[in-house]
Image 1 (tube, rainbow, N blue to C red):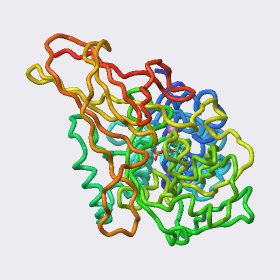
Image 2: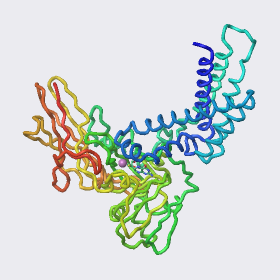
Image 3: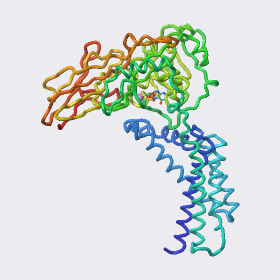
Image 4: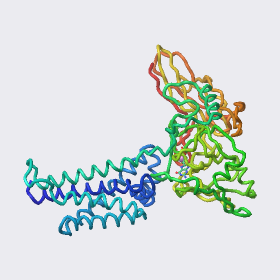
Length: 498
Ligand SMILES: Nc1nc2c(c(=O)[nH]1)N[C@H]1C(S)=C(S)[C@@H](COP(=O)(O)O)O[C@H]1N2
Ligand SMILES: [Mo]
């Protein structure tokens, strides 16, 4: 390699290192909040390219957020690297180049995030890398390294330092998922009933999910301090009114098992889960504000998400602050989310801030992007567990039909020619008052899945097909549709080779 191009690649590498450090510095200063430059840039990218990111990425399922984060990260690092290289090239002397880097990187970050702290964090981190790269430390001629290589090593060390420091901001356990407190005892007793009623299937959760899926429009979840939060009812009401969390908790509250399923959940996908939720019925709050009858409602949330759907669907809903006997986790909408019986996941607004009573329907966030996900869920029987042992096959999974309920699951082991009824789990218990110390687990949950299993002997390769019959006697449709726009349909099937 000849000298100029070697110099150039060292300069480029220093720029990239400063870029990485700037992102880490912003994370260190802003934490896992929208002020972090990675989060703001991801939101900008998402909004600037609705065709790709907002619509298609959702089809990518779990891969969507990491992909968006990776693309955003690369773009940011490239921009910061360019700014750093510019500063180093146009200004003589290490200190001046450092200050220029601080100004460029910090200014850019301020523009992207609007956060001074984030800008200073990013700018200082990049400046430190530039200063570290400005002259080789130590004796002039030590252990063989060329000055260029030594500058690069120093810059690398500074970047590693920034990265290491920023990791303290990640995985801050704000979710409460690993929360050490045991769940509320009355909730615990209902969760035990759920565990007893679950069929134990390899590779499948019980009736209450171990890990609950998430679907979010933003890269970073809102962090809301419950003390500063209010829910406001607006629109066609005699008078707008706001409620604090303690005001909502003062109403008669209840505890319900509810299943959620995303409209983008593939036919045999796993964006479907069940939890035990604590909250106040929506109708209680709407009665308190004398909300008149109306056609529609739009829910607004702290991440600028909004969803609009028929009012009657909301009226039997729950405003939930608790999940599985613990405070609602941040990732599931703390301090308060909606649960709308029988409708697709997207109607269940998290981080809820406003209920707008409307006289006209409108398109929500996803409907503006081509989805039709505000209606009732499709009926589905999932096949998530298949085990073969000594010629005996056991298949099973969950079945869900929203508020219609599940009457039966039928299994065919010959590709659909003949059908047998599968064994069904008992339904999850119905809603109970939140203050009941010894909740009576009678009745059936109005909007929850059930589990099914079927065991049979087989020797040759064969096709298993499953379908559910809903509580109204309607059989799950055989017609195959993809998830977009209004949810997958068809029967799940699997080839089994004993
Ligand atoms: N504020 C807000 N609420 C939201 C969303 C969102 O991105 N922001 N996603 C919706 C979608 S598409 C689904 S499927 C459910 C998922 O709820 P979960 O993340 O608790 O599983 O939340 C809904 N509520
Ligand atoms: Mo969803």
